[in-house]
Image (cartoon, rainbow, N blue to C red; front, side, top):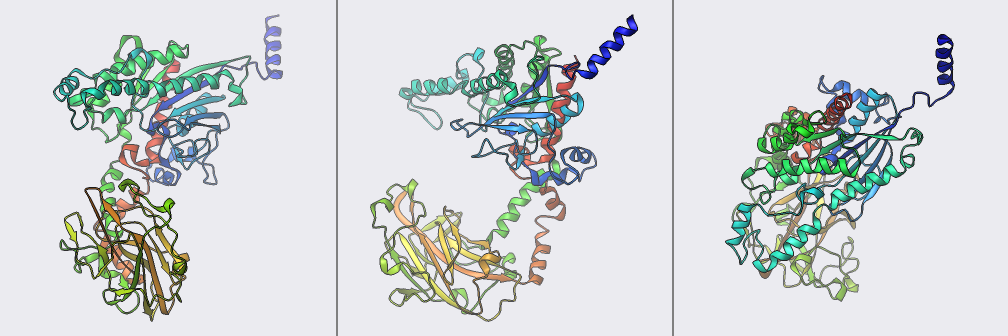
Length: 593
C-alpha cells in the first residue's frame, strides 16, 4: 500500500506542472547612479582579457557574441532623471540594457549595472522563475532623498549648526539667518521622496506580478528573497551632514532604512545585502566601515551582509585614466598660444599636421562682416543666455557661405579677428590682426588653393571662444553650439562625409559665430581663426609612436574596459559584472540560513 501511494504521488507530479512549484522569488535592487549602472556594453571584451573573469563573460554572452537574454529572469526597472520628474518603468526579460538609461527610462540602453550578472547568477543557482525589481536614480543621498521614515527630520550636525550660528549674514554654503527656515522646509520636502517612490513601485509591481513575470503562479504566490542596496557617493562627499569624515550618522540611517523597508514590505527577516561603496578602491576607509557597520548589530545577525566592492576596483584603468586626460588634451589641441597670445610654434605635437593649401594660414586674407540680431525673438539679454545661436540674416546675406557669393564689399583683413581681451589660463589674447567691431555676430570667408590631397586624414584647427558653423565650399562640415574658455586652437578631425568637399584648386572656407559677454564686466570679447590641416600616413604613424610616451599600449588596452568616470567604477563592465555576481552569491548564502 505504501509503495502504491508513492507511485501514485509520483504519477500525479508527472502530469501536474505545479507539483513542485514554489513561490516566485523576488529580489529588490535599489540605490543611486552605480545601481543604475554606467558600464557600456562595448567594454565587455575587457572582461575576457583576465583569466579570472573570462568565464563570467561566457555566461554574459550567447555563442554568437550577443548579450545573453535570461529565460527565467524578468525585470521591472523604475528610473528617470535626478529629480524623478519623468520616471519610467522598463520591463522585460533580463539582458544587457537595464543600466543607466538617460532620457529613455522605458527603453533598453547600451549599459549594464549589477543587475545583469546578479540575475544570471541567481538563475543558474535557483533554476526557477525570478523577478527583479530595480529602482535607482543618480545623485540621491541616504541622508535626504532616500531618508527612511523612522530617521525623523533632517537635523544639522551640532558642529555645522555652531558654524552657521557664527555667520548670521551667511557665507559660502551657509544661508542667511532669515533664509534658514525656508532651507529647512526645502530639506524636509526633499527628505524621503525617493524612499517612498521605491516602496510604492515595489508594492505596485507585487500587486500584479504576472504583469511583469508571465511565469508567476498566483496559487503559489511570491517571496521577497532579497534586497540589494548600492549607494553612497552623495553621502561620501557631503561634508555638511558628515563633518570631518565622521560617518556614524550614515550607519544609523542605513539601520533605519533596513528596518523600514522590512516593515513597509512586511518582510521582517528579508535578506539584505549592503553593497559597500568601492569607489577609489581601498580608500575612503571611514565611509566603507560606516556602510558595513549595521551587519554587526544584534538584530541584523544572520540576515544582513556587507559585500565590499573595493576589491573589484581596477588598478590598471585607474593608472591609465589620468594619462587618457593628458592624451585627450594633446590630440584635442591643434595649436597652443604663448602667454602673450601669439602662436606657439615650438609645440612638438604640431609638426606632424600640415596646413592644407596656399597661402599659409597666417598670410591669408579674409573678408568679414558683423551683424546684430534684429528680430526680438532672437535677441538675448542675460549673460547666462548669451549662447551661440542662429539668427535671421539680412536678405542680401542669405547665401553668404556659398563659393560664388560676392563678398567684395565686406571688410578685408587677416585673422585672428577679435574684440576685447580674452584672459584665461595665463594667456592674454588682445592683439588681433583684424578688429571685429561692436556687433555680436561675425561672418567671415577666405579662399585657399590646394595642389595635393595626398593625406591620410584631415582636421580643422580653430580658435573660437563661442560656438560656430564651419562651411567648406558651401557645405557645412562642423557645428559647435556651446562655448569654451580655452584660448587655443582646437583640433576637430574630419570624416569622409566632411572631407569629400575638399578639392584640388580653389576652396572657400566660411565661418559663422558670435561674441560673448564677460560675467565680470559688460564688455564683449571674442576671437576667431580657422584653417584645415592634413597628416600623411607616415606622419600619423610617427605621431602615434610619439604619443605612446603619454598613453602606452598597455594603458590603451586597459581603457577599452572603461566608459565613464571613476566615481562610476570607470563605467567598466568588468567591475559591475563582478559586483553583481558577488551580490547574488551573498544573497544566496543568506537564503540558505
